Structure formats: C-alpha cells, structure tokens
Length: 470
Image 1 (spheres, rainbow, N blue to C red):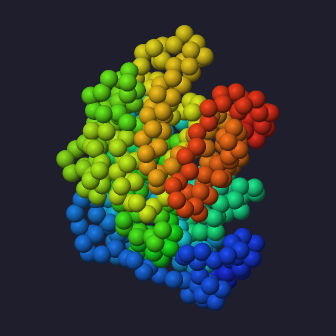
Image 2 (tube, helix red, strand yellow):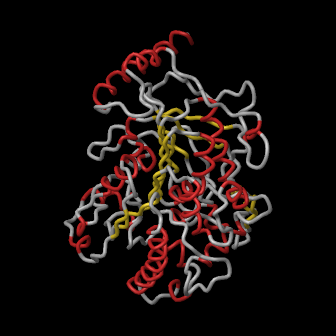
Image 3 (cartoon, one colour):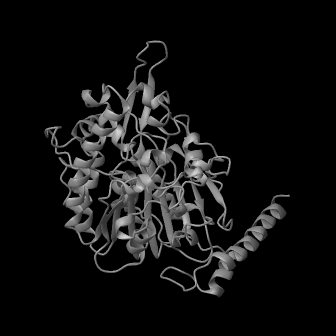
C-alpha cells in the first residue's frame, strides 16, 4: 500500500503544481527561476541539496548539526505546494522552551530555488508568569510546544499571518508567494537569540519550578542546517518576520545569509527594532536600556562565547555594548544586500514590552490614556534615534507609517499590506517591499508625520473581527 499511496500523493502534487504555475507564476523569469522544461522535470525528480553542510560547519560555536542517521523527518521532496512538518532531533541542538521537540515547516515549489525564511512573531518571556503562558499574548508564544498541524487553516494566526507566506492571498501580492517558503515557529520566548536554560520559581509557591530553554539561536542554526542539507541554494532569499520574528530575523540574518549563500539576499524587519541602548546608559535618554539589560542576563546573550560574541565574530562593526549598532554593522558587512526596517510610530504592543514593566510612571499610570501617551513618548524617542541611524545607510532603508487600527498598531505586514500607508507621501507598504526586493540604488526611506489622517479612516470590519480573536 505504501508505494501506490506515495505515487498518488506525488501525482496529485504535480497536478496541483501545474495549476498553481498556470495561475500564480510571474510573467517574466527572475534570478533563481527554472525554465519550463526544468520545472516539469522537477515535478518528477525533485532537485536535491547543492550546498550541503561541510564538515567544518559541523564544528565550532553554534555549529550546523544534522538529524542522526535513520531519523525520519517526514519530508517528501516532491510534495509541492503544501506545508510539510519537519521535526528536528535533540542531537541538532533544537528544542522548544518547555523541552519538547522543535519543528518547523516547509512549503516547496518546483519552479524556482528562491526562498523566503519567515520567523514567526509572538511575545517574549523572562519569568515564571510570562514563560508558563499565564500572561497570554504578552508572554511566550507556544509555551506548550508546536503541534504538527500548526499551519492548518484551523490556526489562521500562523497559516494566514502574512502575505509573504500566503501563496494565494486574495489581494496583497508579493513575489515570495511564488517561492519556496520556510516558516520558523517561535517557542522559546527569546526572539530567536537566546542560549540559556533558566529555572523560574512560581511566585505563588504552589507549582513546581519551571525549567525553560531559551534556545532560540540553536533552533535557528538547526533550521539552517536542515535547509542546506535538503534544499537548493537560493538564487534569491528573503529573511523576514514581524515583532519577535522581525528582530529574530535581524539577529540571525548574517549567519543565515552566510551559510545559505544566496546570490541575492534581502532582509525586511517588521516591527522588531533593536533600539540603541548602550550598557549603563541613562534610561531617560535611552528608554530600552532597562529591558535590554534584563534580557542580556536572562537569555544568556552576554555569556562567554555566547550569542552576541558569536554574532560579533562575523560582524566586526557590531558594538557589543549597544544592540542598535547591529544595523550599521550589517550594512557595512553586506554592502550588496538590500535591507529594510518598518514599524508604526504608534505601536502599543512592542512599546508595552519595552517600557511598561520598567518605568513606574507607566506601570502605575492613573488611566489608559496617560499610559498610552507615556508609551508613545518613549517609543518616539527610540524610533527617532533609529531613523537617524538608518538615514546614514544607503542599503538599509526604513518605512515608518503612523497607525493602523488592528493588533495595537503592531506589525505593518500582517494580514495584508493595505492601510500600512503613508498618506502624505502617497505610499503603501507594497512600495517599500518592492523597493527593497526589486529596486536599485539607495533603499527607500520614508516616515509619516501626519498624526491625524490614519485615525480618520472608516471602520474596518475585518480588523475589528481579528482584534476580537487576538
């Protein structure tokens, strides 16, 4: 029964692939695309890895480790246009925060080597309440691990999260919808950057201590290892994500780009800023310094030969005492890459993480309006400094709209690209995305100053409904 079933699945995948090629394929071939006959051949004989992990890459700090021989990851190379669950064995170094098996998801196509790597968004955690899931969306995403059917339509918060990874999005179009898609789920609460096992005590003294694996960096390395050993080297690659996924894509971009070795590479960080906050700085001048001081310790970022030292080894321009230096360090090290950052000026989600628990006047504000005004003030202070940093970089642009009435004005690229606009400049988010991925010369830099227009837009039933779900 196994052989006929496998052949039937491959035949159905091939038919589905031909239909999708007919309706979704770009009009003109690009770097990384295969011709018609090569594509047909790939439907029958899927291409294998042409850039596998080398023996040297299996060694050293944060090596690229493989599943052990005989381990069944369930991947079917010819199962095109469907999400496949890829589990990673503990031998790869990958594990979710609660110690359960880490897995990620691949949606392959036969017509191109081009690949989008999407880091999932979510919260962050650094204590018992936030890592155990008690704080809901304000804490760690997937505190109980990742189910195999995570990207089914029954979980639209993942399967329909962004046009970047929704192949047949009804109205927002972007060329990654025709690419191989890699969805990297989030379950460690450390923006894909930590490397420390923490033990958190229940403040009520009732439950057992929580042993939590802030294992984000090793998970990311294990994903890259598998991709190199199983898929083609990309002609073009986009690394992106929103919120924790945005900053996770930012911190993992250099090693992922180095090891995947695409011919052309792009980065779009949506709403995951690494604000400048020099160690020991005055919080009134650098509002993110208190949060960053905590996570440096809790997630093990500063340990000897740890995540920041590892990143510094490939990015000599990185100042280990100032995470905001990551932007110019990437721009200098990768002058041919096109990179961009985007977030809303009135983001109330990431700003709450950054400041609310660290400033008494915000946490104890007498009413919601006062709290929001204080959050906006500090967010604007950090954002203005980031904007000025990016303004000096030709290959790292920015797109900063004011407000969108969904998800606390957080993440410009989720759901759809519409309404993440800068009305005074006649720009939509599509313009920025296309400029990063298709443009030449300096990457677009655009910021909204109108504080009224976005608030005067008509009621949006879709956004209201999604907010109720969130």
